Image (cartoon, rainbow, N blue to C red):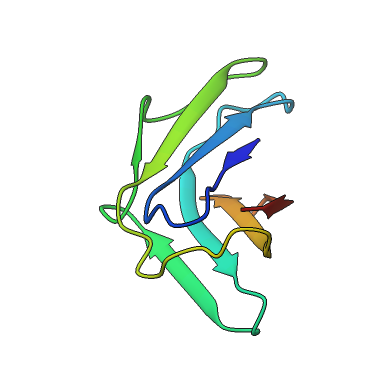
Amino acid sequence: EVNLRGNVTSCTIYVRNIGKTAIIVDDIFISLADGSLHKYEKPQFSTDFDSVVQGDLMTINIPNLGFTPTSGETYTVKVFTTRGVGDTYQVVA
């Protein structure tokens, strides 16, 4: 789940590990409606745990997106682990 609200320059992402191996989030990408791409690496974002094991939930906070989301616009958020495994979320601000 991604919490990305219009006119708020921060973002919260919730990731549940459904795999069998502990994960560490490495990179986050947010695509805007105009096609531009924003990449975030630590320390640009923080997590409540260094890693998350099978079944557990991790909260990721990006305090400064570098852009202001527009209400009603659709954004694509991609989260990748240190192993290169990722997932994609679409969210409307």
